[in-house]
Amino acid sequence: MPQPPTNDRSEPSEKTLSSGAIEVVFSWRHDRWHHAVHLRRTDGSRAASCLEMAPAAATDDPQWPSSPPLVELAEMTLPQGPALLGVGLAGKSHYSVSITAEPEGTLLFEFACRLATPAGWLGSTYVMGENGASLPILIEPVGSAAVLRGTTEPDWPHGSRMLQIVPGSTDDNREESRQKGSTVQWGYRLRIAQTA
Image (cartoon, rainbow, N blue to C red):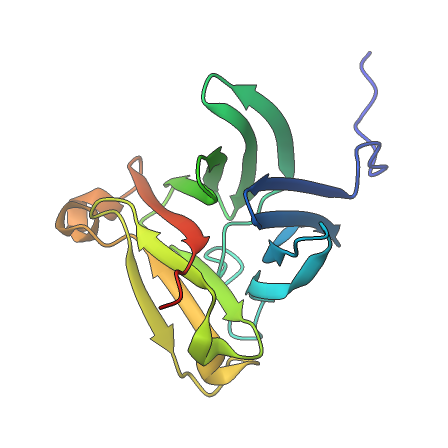
């Protein structure tokens, strides 16, 4: 008879993916992978995070968390280069992500959620670094699959320093595309903002 899985994590508690001077760092916290985006200095050390996955707020619905809850994360080498692939579950809906290192200092994030019930909140929520007004990272939606919006909700622990990336195409917002059995996708690229 097979043994039940244990809670011991034999895998590393940190996984990274970088392209040029931009790096995403995943660390295991409590029951899921948490991530932050950093710039790397010329000496190879990490600068303070520019974007960090927002912590769960008291108002979060556990079935529809503020960011996809990833519980498995694998390092892969794809034909286009290194990548991280992750999966998770909230409520009865399944989440997945692929993060690939693209040339010229760019990371591509592609998320999907397979809905087992009609969708509630879907998207990715970040806390911007201390100097959020001059974010050194450029966030580019992939096609029409994402909309960027800041939030100033007073119940968020970090107030107006929040950034949300949500499915944004007309097709994704149609009632039938967010019903049980459908898959909703959103994606974005992160790159270093060019200074003038």
